[in-house]
Image 1: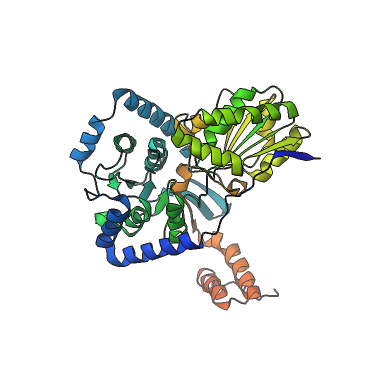
Image 2 (image 1 turned 90 degrees about the vertical axis):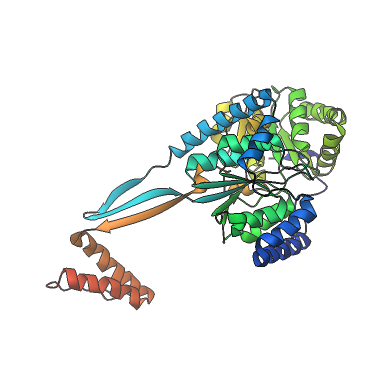
Length: 435
C-alpha cells in the first residue's frame, strides 16, 4: 500500500522541555518548603492577583449573578449530558466475588479516591467545559472532596462562568490560583485543603510538566501534550465541512497538529484550497493559532483505500478522530487507536469538547495507542480481596511453598508451611522446590 502526502508537517509537537522542567521543579520545591506563603508569592507574580485564594460562598454567589441565564442553561445542559454518560460508565464497574477453588473466595471492589484536584484553564480561553468534564466525573465517581482550581484574571478573579460550572457540577472548594502554584497547592494540601490523591484537567506546558513531576506522589489523568485531531473522509464527504472541522481544531494552539486522510485526491485538493480562506475569516486571536498550526503541523495524506486510511489512523493514534465516510459501522469495528471517535458529519469534535456527554480530557501525542481519556474510572481504585476456609487454603499453600522455593524466596515459602502445619498437623506435604 502507498501513501501520498500532499502536505507534510515541518515541525512536531515534541520539543526540548529541559528548561520548562527546571523551572517547574524549582517552583514545586520552593512551594513544598514554603507552603502557603510561597504559593501566594507565585500567585502574585504569575497571576497578578491578591484576592481570596479559596472563594467564599458569598463570592461564588456574586460570580454566579454575573452569568447570563442563557449561558447557565447551556452549562446545565452540558453538565446533565456529561453526568448521564459518567453514570453509565460507572455502572460498567461492579464489585464481585468468585470462588477460585473450593473454599477460597476472591473479590474486587471499586473504591473512589478521597480527594480530587481539577485544574481548569482560564488564560486565553475560559475553559468552562473543562470544569464540567473534570468536576462532574469526580462527583459521579464518589470522591469525598473536589477542588476546582482555575487561574484568576488580574484584579478580577476567576471567570464567572467557570465559577458557575464548578459550583453546579459539585466542587467542594473553588480555588483562584493558576499554573504550577495551583497544582502544587492541591498536591501539598495548602490553604487548609486535603492533599489531592489525583490531579486532572488540561493546562499549559508548565501545568503539564508539574503533573508529570508530581506523578507518583499523586495520580494524574495523563501526561498531556498539544491537542491533536485527525479526520478520515471518503468521496461521500462534504469538503467544506471537512475544512471547517480542521480549522476548528487548529485554533486550539500554534502547535496543535491537524491531520486528515482520504482515498479521494480531488477531495483532498479541494479541502486544502478551502482551509486558508476559512482561517483568514477567523477573529485575529484565533487566526494566529490556526495559521501556525496549519502551516507547521498539518498533514494531508492520500491513501489507496479505506483499509490503508484506517491503518494510517491507528499509527497516528489521534486524540480526536472524525470519520466522514460510508459504512460507519465498518469504521467503528476497524479503528482501534483514538481518544474519542466521532462518526459521521452529524457530530463533530466540538460537540464532544463542549456538550454531548463524552469527556474532552483525552490522550495526546500518540498516547491513545495505550490509554483512554478521563472517565469515572480514573478516580476509582480497583482493589482485590480474598478469604479462605482452611480446606480452601490447602492446595494454594502447597503450590505457594513450592513456587517460592523454586524462586529462592524461602521466607515466602515458610508463610505457607506454617499454615499447613497448623491447619493439617497430621498430614505430610512435599514442599520442596523440585517436588
